[in-house]
Length: 418
Ligand SMILES: Cc1ncc(COP(=O)(O)O)c(C=O)c1O
Image (tube, rainbow, N blue to C red; front, side, top):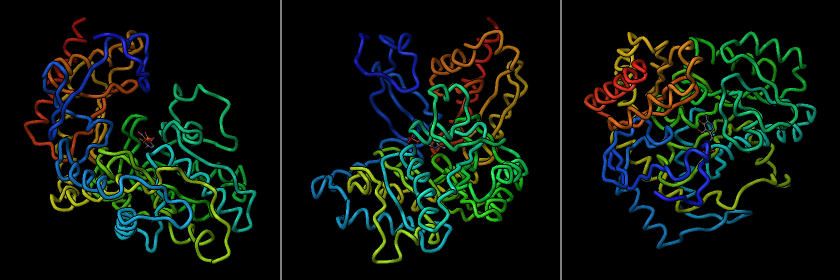
């Protein structure tokens, strides 16, 4: 395959150029490349194709909407039917009462929006000195400005200097969060953000009670608690917003990915009634001067509505609850492999197979080689620092999990033999 002008995200282009992997088609848990070879999509693209590929219903909804009103901006008083239907539906599904929904095109811009709403909320409520944003080690919040600064994966943080007033705490220690807020001074802290299950930072489920305690610490200090459910929402953790199983009622929930199962770019924020109030409740309040051309894009919203219909009709939330144990057990069979240090997961339909750190130190290319060997066996898994990540569509069947584990084991054997 010849060179292309496409600069891939998160790619070493010197190696990728001329050696791209071209996908042409998708159907349920499968995708095909340009040579007609079929692969199990064990990562649901990037943790997002929750309903599986090739759903005609979503394509039809997009087609129908495009013929009606393909696109229009929503600044000021302008709106459209799909965005009204989608935001009412999301607000009704949210675990907090009377929420408002802000929309954009993906997770990264929703993260930036959350940070700006948090800071502006405190300006509007008379605490403008609350500017500090707290995130966690191993966090991934996208690659926009705020998200890069909030991220806790060291190699992603090379583009310094960052947004000011962003600090990090250990991802598993609510006491450290409490201590950090006290050290900074609660009157200076605007928000704390956490993924319910850390995704790109290694698939790290929370310690029992951690999220509940972190939320309580935030409440105690008047700090906003923001859940980044970009991966965890829309079934990945067996619920709509990935926070329900922990009994959380965050001040804001960031979502993207599974809201359309990735068919069309869409992301946004669920904003609690309290946080929305200073922007909504008085006729004379100033506009929040933030938002993108594609906020409330009618075609993206039509895709989301069709996707939610599928999740509802096929009970994919309940299915995910059952799948999480099955996936964890399947991946757990790999722990006996000498190259495997640990298998993480068990909270939601996502997992990671962490390779032995000594072997990795000796040969950092091992993860990519195992993933490539699995691909040769017809299974797509994602190399992620020292681990292989999996997050299949929520329609995955037991036989697919068997295929996944077999292919990873073959890849591990090949890497171990070298
Ligand atoms: C937890 C989390 N937040 C935010 C993002 C950024 O979303 P996007 O890639 O749509 O900008 C991601 C992307 O993987 C994510 O996993």
